[in-house]
Image (cartoon, rainbow, N blue to C red; front, top):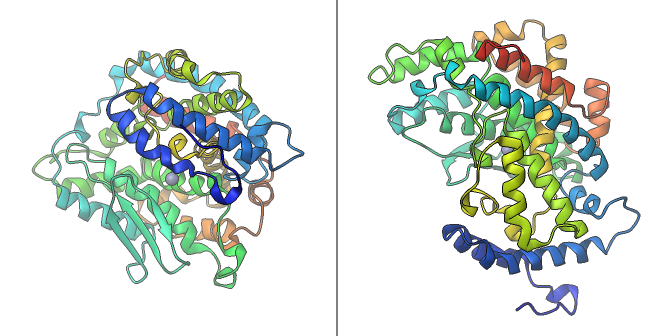
Length: 407
Ligand code: ZN
């Protein structure tokens, strides 16, 4: 059904698959999407053919999202991460009844949720003179220079923290854009290049700050004040434990901090196989479901909850997924460094003072724009390359506290 492109100018757009994907997902019908995916893979191969000197064809695709990163390096990091996460999640699943999340699943009026999120992002550094926040179906952040930052969130009346943490996440992205030095504006260095670094900023604010014990102590009383009708007795401890509940689930974007990495590792493995030709497209749903069972212990019975859930492949974004999990790893490294650089950080966060953290991130990361590669920047800030151990020990520390189990 696809015309062979006769030149770059006539190359059909990969994004034509997006419409097909919307329908295929609605009908949970992978077969109707398969020809479009096949076409996008063909385009990816043609793109790879424009380059040489790579170890693995996937390196070329990955490079568009994480410049300089090699497939072999991601594979090494992810193998280490997977070996830690699989048993950790199994232990937490066995102890699922220890954490009660019902306190965040009541009916929380959206107008008051708006107040909560506005307060929190303001504390983080949202600047009303140059920023705006709007509603979106899928939250995102964008900017047009360091003084025009736009973030979005989405509202869910029966989940108190969905909009809050999406807002903190996008505000973390926004702070990165806002923190790029004036001297780099309107130059190529004034753009950010590494999606992993960008994601490290959003995840650090969302998870390490937002779901951390000290700041939960700020959020809980504010919630009681705003929602005295629904949560009049919400205490910081119950809130902290509820928002850190780990539970294997089907949808990546709704996954908790621990299981999230496995969703990404699964996609990374399948993308490589699709690119090197060792996985025929028609077998993709079956292999997806088998790996999902192996990693997360869940049986996928519907492609909309499985292989068809993400938009990325429908417009040819192959090589993007790894950056989501690499962002978590970098956030873990930065968090470890922050612990040494700002020893009183917990006290500051517990007092709702977020300025020192924001300024540290601006000084060490944001202001440089894309002056340094991710490797160079990490070398400067944490003294070494991307690593798994800091993130894993952060997770173990927090989740053994939340679940009161040895991890
Ligand atoms: Zn993000």
